[in-house]
Length: 320
Ligand code: ASP
Image (cartoon, rainbow, N blue to C red; front, top):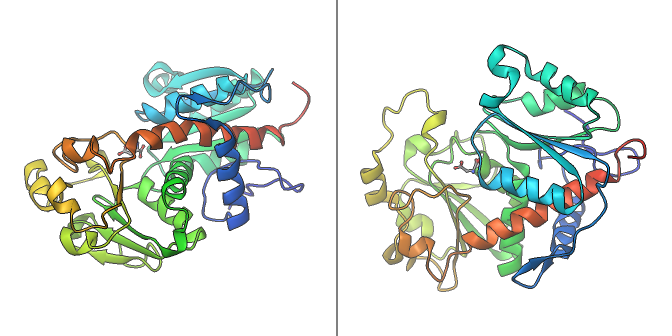
């Protein structure tokens, strides 16, 4: 496994949350909080990444993650370059490693990478030079560490006593990197109870998600939950859709509606990483309703990415 911390304790890469301890995770969340000022602003621009270059390499579609990394890097005064899958030389056959080497030759300091293939962020991190950093911005079905951070930050803001919370993740957990990273972060914070709720073909194998309880029916899975995290069905990650319900059938059985929300606690919060498929995994009434913290997750995403970049800035080599 790639070493994510430098010898002096500064953050070198962020590939996974799996091997962070509670102190390291809370330190990142606390740092993110410092960038959140009231409801209308982030903290003023900081010079931490002045003279540094951050490259956003997105080989899978992204709206929230890409834009928030861009905003986060610019708010820390970095120069930002963006490469999308189709616009890069990868379509001409260049390997990802060569693309990274090309950007390294242009003195890129931080690589933010999203890929549909598992293992790529760690592989690239193992090849980039000393004093350079890599952040995983979404890796196949496996990991999405900054999403996991923004999710637990959002939960902590609304319900700080995480050890006594019941969190229900609902939907396509089998193919979801969001669910995996959230479960890792919640595990590190010792969540009271974690439920995985969805139709059997969308639930993960039993040996994954240590300690979580599986529910193949929605209502029992939602009963008395403090937090509900709805997920999009990841049809793009399925080799065959046999056994996967149609959108209508899914909404009938697992769609989060105001009526179904009544099974949960009265002050339940409802989360969704986006993009939302309205009237598939969640009704508009719930997505836009009083329990929804979806907008807050997006706001927190910029702050969390600023915190990760700021921590990484401490370990970059040379003076910019
Ligand atoms: N935006 C999230 C991700 O990149 C969730 C999703 O696409 O459904 O994994």
